Length: 484
Ligand code: DUC
Ligand code: ZN
Ligand code: ZN
Image 1 (cartoon, rainbow, N blue to C red):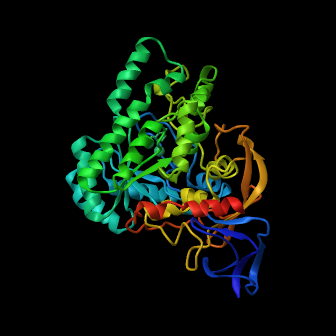
Image 2: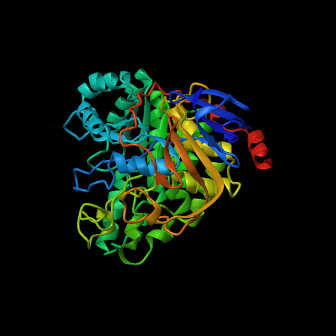
């Protein structure tokens, strides 16, 4: 007898859409067929899609800023509750090295933050800020062997950024060990130079954040990062791509056969510079790096999403409250745009926003939605097929998706302990009404129903970066999805 049978749903993976029941034993999928025998628990998914739970592979949970004193609004409990209630069943936050201390120390520290709190499964990327010989020679190889197989580095922020030689050394490590490098690609000096120009003229309103992060700033860094990856002969994921200019660089690199992977986020597909332009300090709600850009840029990013430039869609959830002395205004309430804490919340609305704005509008197929929100991240970070798809042997992480359920986005319905959502008032059509993590209900009808500490640490295998045509969902698939 199964522990759980999910019946009568339309199962969707990155490649297929079909009707069948799903039998679950000990948290994993053990049967997929029509008319399965009964389970101890029965769930009727008739009229709904059954999707693999989402993987949010770019989230900052309980990640404070030692430089400014800003404190994340989410610990691993509230952050993962919020994720689960939006259809996500795996998160990959960061363990950030503080310059001068060890990476191992950072990993130990973040484990302590997550243990007994996370309600869904989690892995960690490491952030390298100080690639000393012992970090490169001992710590990183040992951590990769233990399941930390993705390494993020920055090209901006004084406390975080690496010099070109350091970047090449990190990429060399990734090549040697088969680890996945990820980069925040923005040119630090361009930002500083433009910021000084604005501030010297007294141009301090949040709107100037967008002016300073001119699209050239991201394009310049993305181009160089791609060149470094080509030189080191290693795949590279460019995180939170905000501009069509950087997306063009990714597309061009991929067309040359390089394994350059692009990630974008809801804020770049839904928000624009008009949001940052709001009265007074309202614009602070939309301050992140890189910030949303023009309407035309947003339109082009959608085109890039539709045509395969991006493989991963993450939230870059970085929650800092407007009303907290350690939030957006930790450096003061009358401060220029450059001193407002960077980051937007988005972990809960990531999947509903893309479903509503992408699938319902016909911009992407539901299979592409699954690929972008779950499957491709699992492949990229070595979690596939335990996570990221629906197949026999996979974890029973399932999001029962009601395509007709309408929700008006509002801070009142979210679970992330924030005092605002940048998407307030947005009408969303399609919602994950029940979410299972390893066969256990974690969320039902927008309410958390899981258990603190249910989430387990996932050791990532070496990434298997697929060739381009394995990532791409075929046109035939898209055609079929639109027929149904
Ligand atoms: N930018 C980042 O690089 N990280 C978190 C938040 C942000 O806005
Ligand atoms: Zn970043
Ligand atoms: Zn980030």
